[in-house]
Amino acid sequence: MIKRIWQAMPWWVWVCLILLLPITSMPWIVNLVGSDSVAAPSGIALALLVLIWLVPYILKRGAFPAQAIPILGFTLVALVATLMASFLPITPYKDVSFIRNELKDVLTLFIGICFYLVVATFPVGEEHLQKTLRWLNWGGLIILLWSLVQAISWFSFNHYPDLVRQIQEFFSSGPLYRQRVNAFAFEPSWLAHQLNMVYLPIWLAATVRRYSVHKFRLFGITFENILLAGGVAVLFLTYSRVGLLAFLLTVTYLFIQANIRVSNWLKNRMTRDQKGNTFRRRERILSFSVTALFIVSYLVILAGGAFALSRLDPRMKELFTFSFGKDDPILRYADRLNVASRLVYWQAGWGVFNDYPILGVGLGNAGYFFTQKLTPYAWSLVEVRDLIFRSPNLLNIKSLWVRLLAETGIIGFAFFISWLYLLWQSTRTGKNNLSPTWKSLSLAGKFVLLGLLFEGFSLDSFALPYIWFGLGLLTAASSTYSTTVKEN
Image (spheres, rainbow, N blue to C red):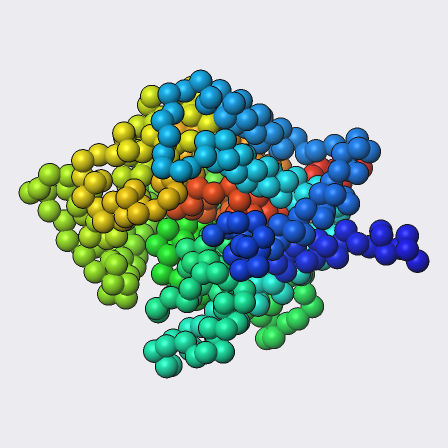
């Protein structure tokens, strides 16, 4: 009996990890770990899985997937860069402990890598992957329902009832927002991030592939179809601009693929005679016309979406107002759109990278150089002055891509990009595979990678598990497919 319970325990801890994913900053976890933002209870489930499953797996000489090699190389480079930072001219900043700050960031990277390795190796076989997807869908449904409660509460009463506030305060140390939903996340952009990195790619891929891990059908509509519609609505209600752009990129990718198929079909129908001869001139004219039509259509849709957003989101009301008549016109325009602070942080991080391009300045150390690297215009921004003069914390870069360059240099950045490239290539290995689970998850993996291009300009924390989980699931699916091919 005890043996059976012990054997079943990793699976149920895995289920707990999946269901706890939507919660990013639970108050009692905040008090436990001393973090004022990223304090995900799924980390506790991860710690248990590392102890009862990952460590025994390694001791039994369990193999890691080939896709894990570049990210493990990145981890080694990051550790070397952090150790080498002791020889850099880093000046003290307020009461921030140099050693403690480095240890904290090394720990967050270690947590992220553990998330990736557990997710990449724990789901073994197609049945295990399908069960995982079912639990992810149920967890996603909870996100959508609580977001719906938040939206109805605000738009119906123009405030949040006490019961809604009490429930939110139990699950999140973050506040409730005016006109924006954040479900169980610390802030709306974090909710958009978890949707784009885990849930929406799975639901969109299942919808495109006409695949479902549930038996539910309603007039041909699957559970994933319903979740996708709700997820897109919730993503819009976050009003996360980067989140919306990330999802738009995945949709654009689908449209481009569809356009290529339509273009090829038209060329086959309209540029060849019954004997199969091709009319080259007609083919060139048709290719140019179809391509121009699609480009114009995309521009019209993009302009329409931007216009609608400028009317719905107060931060975007000056989207179409730009002036070249003053100094720093780009930064001034960004300030009117409430993104100037992000740009000056990226500039400062890029300045750090320019000074230390090989290995960077080590994890968590870029903020020590910010006061030297901030541009004169940056000092005019209220947010920057508040953080420098009133906050006890280091400033951070707010962009994963710039942070990788500034803190791990070109070497660490190259390892990280190699990891993403290898994952993208792994999505292409199953084109002729008959497994609908693999086809769906490989497409979902592409959506995660595409979404990360934009999401990487919004968040820079290794502690948030969503990138690691989404890409870990792609790795697990790829490993399952590779094993199946070898066995056959």
